Amino acid sequence: MAAAKKAVLGPLVGAVDQGTSSTRFLVFNSKTAELLSHHQVEIKQEFPREGWVEQDPKEILHSVYECIEKTCEKLGQLNIDISNIKAIGVSNQRETTVVWDKLTGEPLYNAVAAPVSPGPSDPVAVVASGSSVPAAGASSVWLDLRTQSTVESLSKRIPGNNNFVKSKTGLPLSTYFSAVKLRWLLDNVRKVQKAVEEDRALFGTVDSWLIWSLTGGASGGVHCTDVTNASRTMLFNIHSLEWDKELCEFFEIPMKILPNVRSSSEIYGLMKISHSLKAGALEGVPISGCLGDQSAALVGQMCFQDGQAKNTYGTGCFLLCNTGRKCVFSEHGLLTTVAYKLGRDKPVYYALEGSVAIAGAVIRWLRDNLGIIKTSEEIEKLAKEVGTSYGCYFVPAFSGLYAPYWEPSARGIICGLTQFTNKCHIAFAALEAVCFQTREILDAMNRDCGIPLSHLQVDGGMTNNKILMQLQADILYIPVVKPSMPETTALGAAMAAGAAEGVGVWSLEPEDLSAVTMERFEPQINAEESEIRYSTWKKAVMKSMGWVTTQSSESVSDFAFLGGCLHDLNQPKAVLINIFHYFLDCFQALSECML
Image 1 (cartoon, helix red, strand yellow):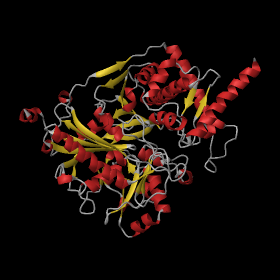
Image 2 (cartoon, helix red, strand yellow):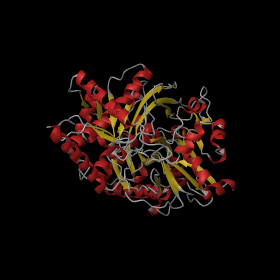
Image 3 (tube, helix red, strand yellow):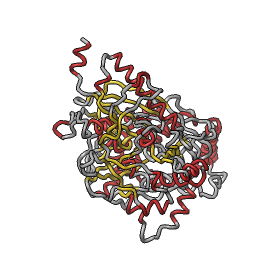
Image 4 (cartoon, one colour):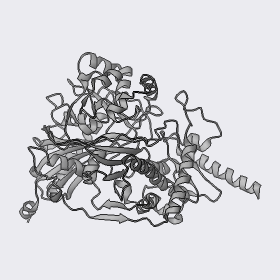
């Protein structure tokens, strides 16, 4: 019976899915795209100061080892031979920045983050509430705002009539991307400075750190990245597909520390034995796929045609629209980025991208900081009880507004409160906020591309919330389509790995791609109501801007209670609950005075 089970399985492909809140390893059947087994490990984030977000690169690496080992054990229990795993792909949080010592394999500082790019399957990022001093050996994650002053200084050096940074990279000068995080490390961390001087330092995003470590580390590890991750550094020319000398000089980044740039689908190196892996599980298996998480989801959703778009709902939201082989530069606040290049000799495809920094994270905030829900799943129940926000609007700009505004001075606000407002209305408003932010990005994409989307493909942990998906269809006023197999990010990485030259176990030809069953949500309100709600949301967004300056994030008025306090994701729960009740009491007292 076990032999028969093995006989029906085609070649298998594994995928590392490394996000801000967790790491997973998943194994797929390359002939059917069926998910056979997986394992997930939560990872910590550290907040050494307000606006700083970091992770330990060694913890990230160890979580990958653990996930691989546990998944292999589970496959064994299913009588599936792990020798059938023919390739491994890597999908990762993108802009998070790591610098390490190539002689010792030790990170030189924590990974410095960008605003949160979650593992798409995570409905809510698990964020450590405590803060700690960063250990030597950590990474800068994507929500980190420490580089704001660096960005302002650099922006003064860009001529107003020649924004060569954006024209070469497709990106605005922002704290979001890796170059300014790397510049901060070079300016502020002596261990990094010394390692660069002594030619010991290597830089990379999380994919580079993992591939280098998994292929041997200090004993011959391969230092590389793919075009999708390189395109998020602000050092990569998306036209020539090379590191750009002018950009590196502008940011004063030594090119010798940069990884080699490869396609998203080719053999980079082979898995090497690690003491962390029992019996050297998967030793010798090629690592042959690499995609930044959002590009991986685009591939996993099979958005291979011009104009196809997907939105991933996790800690943040990321909406990508395939623009084909041409770069489309946005006039409405979106990013131009590399979508994928599925082979050394294959063409590069581009995408327009809009990001919402706070999506699932707003649910976590309601749970951990306000305490109005105990689990993330409860929000659907609360929202269902009222079926409306009753005029309440929630703009969760905890670390500024991203696309299409790119406004770092914004902070979170809840407005439109009355004495009737309760936690159910605020829960509903939080879900609406995710949908309104997505609508803003989609509107910008439609204007840039000139072709309105007929439907939106969705994935990510939050898509399990049926209220959210129905709200999204209502607010966009187009159908929302969800695949029954939700692991699209890992699937995309596996597809790239299995399709690589020299592996060849996964065909990406249209006629060979497995059909995916879909769940469809149709709009259930009229267009006029949808537009009224959306225009009111935009008024609320305007109110959220201008709360802070780089000189002082505390320089808001004492009377801007809720707006001023919502800027801190880690405000103690008791403080926020008191503020919340104070605000409601004020409204009630005011209404009584008016009677």
